[in-house]
Image (cartoon, rainbow, N blue to C red; front, side, top):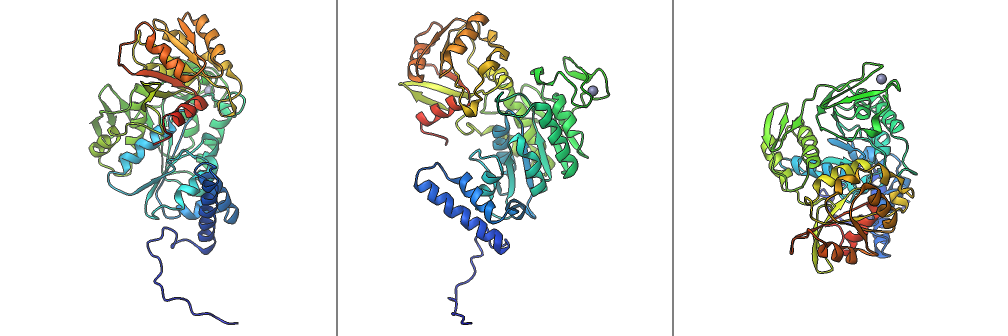
Length: 433
Ligand SMILES: [Zn+2]
């Protein structure tokens, strides 16, 4: 056996993978090569395909990349991307943080994000609600944030009670040191009750239609303002540890002012989750709140951009619970708005959920319906008694809204879109930041 002298180079101590076992290092290198090749042939960023390739080399790569690392998981049907972003800002005030900021929220996307990360950085991971169990088992995350569970993509996503059951089992199998969970969502409360320690957040969630049946006993849940309980077993709203008011967040350590750049009540709640988790890990509440306040857009959501020579603000709403919150964020009536609905694979092919959204709340203004399912939306708006027009594309829709009664010249037109319509418009205005 001959050995060739190796060049006298010092080890690359600055590389984020030198601490890993050889197989994991090979996996990360493979992932990067595949991602690079994929990017070269314009298959998007390549991060997911690179992550898949890396996991073929080392199935335990996520465990290797998170061994000895502080890990936080954020999951929900709605708000997980925004809350993850707010949590990154809050924790980033006093420590290095890595996150899967490209929104690839299953194991391949997560290993792609961590493969290039500082080994000491705290990992804040947005996790698809169906992937909480495997990601928790691999990472042994110390903190898990569970925001809500509701119907999404009717023909694709598992029934919400099944998801709650999987969360429950996952928390029992790999108990994190703390769970931060929504006290106003019975499905989340039941799931989180498997964890040894829970920080309960009062969210004032008004959307209760997906939790009419008790996840514990199948009895009926009785909702009253500010409280809920099962009429057949002892599942009931826990006493909250964290809540929001109009200008701040009340944390276990005291009240902190919060001045968010992001709009809407739901984002103050998302920030409350982020601050609860960040301060539990030792972040200074005031500094964390200030940092959360500076977040202006999240993967293109809330961005103000130009379409057809007019300023528009892009809002994402992809299911009934999401629409319930998005309608609150719109410029007040009589400002006209554009509403865009597609029904592709990523939206779910079945748009019958339109009938579960309280579009009656759009009355008093002109709504311009666009997207591939604009005619389904127009029928829904007609039954809701909402004045509306349809437009074949987004440029025409924005022009119609700007010409409609109630539009203040020069003001921003709100465009609320479901998933693939939102992505299409985001590409039109230059893609994610
Ligand atoms: Zn019950």
